Image (cartoon, rainbow, N blue to C red):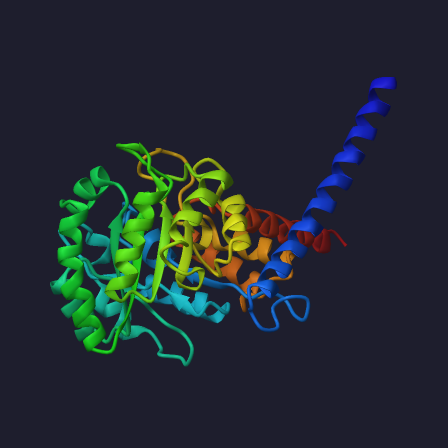
Length: 352
């Protein structure tokens, strides 16, 4: 009995401490936003964060079974209907290497061009850019790495050589009136080199920004980052690129994604990449979680009174739609909980 009472006292103390820390974190986020000069985002009204949905591209590209074009289009429609305004729709890469993305032009052609919704696409080279422009793309993305080994294995060239490829792509895209986003892979660690120096990440981010990329997405490709690692990395990057031009792209391999996103928010980052239902496994850790689930990110942000413009219930429906089509498990913890609650409510209603 004495042990049980002690356990209850400890649990109560921990719960109170957790609630207090959550309130303090929320206040710190809003205070930091106000002190950074974001008008109206301090104590006046909630902080706003833009979600970049990468599921239809980054999430689906490694799926072993071919996903029909109609299913991809319907998924994107549902995501837009849930309130997402930036949805990475396709990749104009070699169909030989990424057959799942061979229908990029058909996907773009079938999408409604609703006001306020953007459908960026990934392009690795000039050939990909020409295909994207012909398909009516309005925004493209280029991708590099902070690790030499990863760059050579992923895009078959050094970091220096990758910039020689990027430059004409970025210049041509901007001349055509397209916005260009830049990705940096392996910002916290590399599957071949191990730890990656923050200065190496900062150097690549600076060059992409200088080339003309309006936004740089910093990707923890293998999900090894922790809040401490992310903070050190962002401190280095923000000496070269302003926080207003940065996004954070976390994988949840070690369960650190949400904590890392919170760290980025505290440091002024206001754009978060995420993938509905956690689509996209980690190819370097078989069976482990890959992209952080959009549902989990939105739930956390709403709990901090952070505006996203996303309707969570509709987002969960979109995630379960694609999971059903792929016959795969939904990796979002929030979706799992909300769907289980719905089933329990239905069962309870039927029993009455």
